[in-house]
Amino acid sequence: MTAHIRFHGGDIYRAAREFGGRPEEYLDFSSNINPLGPSPRALAAVRAALGGLWRYPDPNCVELKEALAGYLGVPPQWLLPGNGTAELLNLLVPALKIRRAVVPVPSFTEYARSMAAWGGTVRAPALLPEENFRLDPARVAAVLAGADALFLCQPNNPTGQVVAPEELAALVEETARAGLFLIVDEAFLDFLPEKQDLTAVRFLSRHRHVVVLYSLTKFFGLAGLRLGMLVAVPEVLNKVAAVTPPWNVNLLAQAAGAAAVADEEYIAETRRVVAAEREYLTGALAFLPGVQVVPGTANFLLLDIRGTGLGAALVRCRMAKRRVLVRDAGSFPGLEEGFIRVAVRLRPENERLVKAFKSVLVENDGLAAE
Image (cartoon, rainbow, N blue to C red; front, side, top):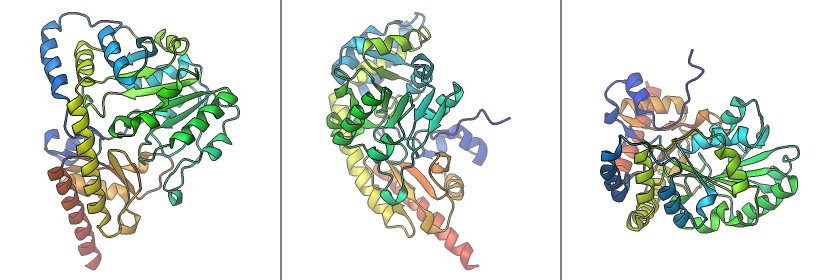
């Protein structure tokens, strides 16, 4: 009866049902959302748009696409907005007739889930912990034959690793030769100051097989509104647009998205805060006995806690009882028991995470001594 339930981070409602209390009592490190919250400009735009709720939203999202086109440096005709990238992902698989895909693991689970939902199959080359989960382009290229698409997450979720510019360029050429789509999910790329060197958008004008999934949920703090974008050349984009439901992006999401990408001060402050807090959190957590921080660059950390003697599910449970949520990474194929993922938040919140984790480790030592 529970097979349909999807386990992602950010489910404070499930946590409240499971551990008690109200959802808002939980400090959520399980979802990787901008710790500053939405852009002030986005909030103002939402308030201004409330009076128009009686109207249908613009089905073509003209103002939103114009704003995003300027932000991403592409023509508006290369953009297809969606109700989050999860919707777009589930539309592009059938629209592009993707039956066989290559998905390096561990990575975001919705790629494989979407393939399974449409009757497809997945090859899953492993990203190895002894290599810090770094993607090996040669290892990936070796399994491309016969596939219709290669899915990459840049930076990868849950590991935080990026595909270097020269490696991404090599995979663009390799997938072109093999005749398959290269679908790059850039949900967390805005957090990185070197975004322009790492984005696959720069290949679109010369490589029609490249497709980019772009999210406004994570960096711009719009998870509750749901807003994503498919970026591709028109001949690819139009195939997905043909199966996209009308009015799939609501009025408030359109207003918020257009305003958010224009808020340069917010964008710069987000990158500054996340970089500083990532450095703090990395050092504080690495100091805990038995905890190793997997090297990465994103606004979240993958923690190897096998040295603590505690399983990830148990740590998640004990942290939740302290009203702190972390992500048990065991639901990511390719990760064995013993890894958790935590988001980078603001300093007082990060300090609370470290304190709660220390408490869990002390509790375990006390139980072991009895």
